[in-house]
Length: 452
Ligand SMILES: *[C@@H]1O[C@H](CO)[C@@H](O)[C@H](O)[C@H]1NC(C)=O
Ligand SMILES: *[C@@H]1O[C@H](CO)[C@@H](O)[C@H](O)[C@H]1NC(C)=O
Ligand SMILES: *[C@@H]1O[C@H](CO)[C@@H](O)[C@H](O)[C@H]1NC(C)=O
Image (tube, rainbow, N blue to C red; front, side):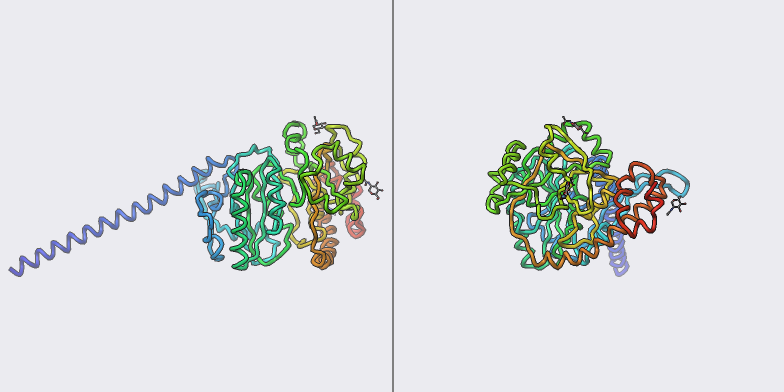
């Protein structure tokens, strides 16, 4: 009797044990298998969906099904994201391996990509990602906005027939953040063009005007081969993108990477007239009329070095279709330009706030061998608004110091580079030699190289 009960009990236990092992084995294989298949599938999908750009996959940009509020990205600032780096290398026995997928922490990568920015700062790429499909030759407008410039931004989006990559700075204060994200959301769903054309990248921190870092972020995440560096308060008057796309030789020059196309900038003399873009000129003929009657003038004409090198007299008398080279460059020149996304140097992120920030981007570009060419059929007009004069004063003093060091240092860095790569006597270094000769302390150090 006892033996019978014991034996039944034993059978029960054995059955339970077998069942347990079965479930465990099933669970483990499923888990392993599922993960493997998932990873393989993910990398397959992403390599199919982004030809020529499949090394890094940003989890933010891959999924299109975030909820509208997306609180998880933002509320928990310690959250980590993983990118999948497709590594190509050799196995220990010499085989070529192409399918190694290495996880990389996204925050670490971004902190190195924008290493000279102030910390802590959080970058959220593609917070909104445009659904439109653009040719790789399209010009992506890269720009920066704060919440008080949403109206100007809407106007740009309605007007421009191409992709836009925008960095939006948000103060990392809870109430402010919620409020801004709500108005951003209202803005984003307010027009079809917005969701078709505009990629939005967020920067969350307490630093107000890291313009050059924000510019770099907008360019970094732009998805076409050419970008325009534009300030949000400009109104696009003419269709320069169509002219560029329709001119093979011009596209070729852009593609070579040593050409930046200048779109001349103007402003209204009368503050109020400059606030009504509906009445802005749309053709060069109308513009010339308004310049002649002194309603419109060169942008920021009080600061001559900023735009004067565009040579406006030449612009006024140019024939339709003309494109001419800027021949009088000096380091304070800061036109609005279109250039190749990959290749030209990035904006130096040490310039924070007003003063020299954009000129620094263009200075390094020029030194590296990029020359400026003016598109004489096209122009943009500034939409007037009030400036924060107090902040400007403080920041200018700070940047003046950075600016002097930056110019000398950049000269020396490129002279060393171009000397050692055997380029110092070639036309690529013409800009470098011409510009750096003007710097007394640089001349003193490397005069023989500059005179080659
Ligand atoms: C096309 O661009 C070239 C410069 O690369 C310029 O010389 C030419 O005039 C342009 N053609 C037209 C039709 O605009
Ligand atoms: C710029 O301004 C200076 C002085 O005002 C003038 O001499 C020069 O011719 C102007 N134009 C160019 C293209 O530099
Ligand atoms: C320039 O490059 C040459 C050859 O690489 C090198 O011998 C020379 O020292 C360099 N000059 C300077 C000033 O760096």
